[in-house]
Image (cartoon, rainbow, N blue to C red):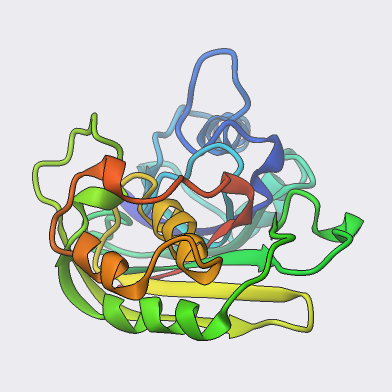
Length: 243
């Protein structure tokens, strides 16, 4: 058996997430179907991070094993079979590689369009925020995130997670341009909806609905209902996975 690494990018708007689900269009389902046609066998993919419906990826990573020969032209063949909103951007043989277990960190970006009227070109690609936004307060929230914290408040109450501490390696807000402000965060691992709940809560701070001290308190293991709303999926991008 040989092991391969696939690098994948996709626009999540028309996908029901990564994980294969009967009767729904998913990234995993579409890729595995295309691979079966090209390689000639059903091959399960292991992925670095399972994205939810509507979430985009610029740097998703998957791995697979097969005893059959895999040509260097596989990405081109797969791209000819998948939709225009899904692309294989890289292929490499990687002995023993596991896209999920071997990942040491993942990096996400959340894009907020803090201008009105909303641009039609950002529809489904950024959260439109038509309210006042204190950029200094957003930066203050991000500055608190570095290090290890208990993120219980930032994942759904009903969860399979048993460990709620995560180490944030880097976090910050920056301006993409005069309309888009973006939050980027890199951590050893993420829980379900963690980035989106962080963003929803930080926007409450930036909008003057809660203070920095309250945000800091949430990082000490407060229950989920005390944090803010879950920001919509369409503003979130998986940027990169580090190994």
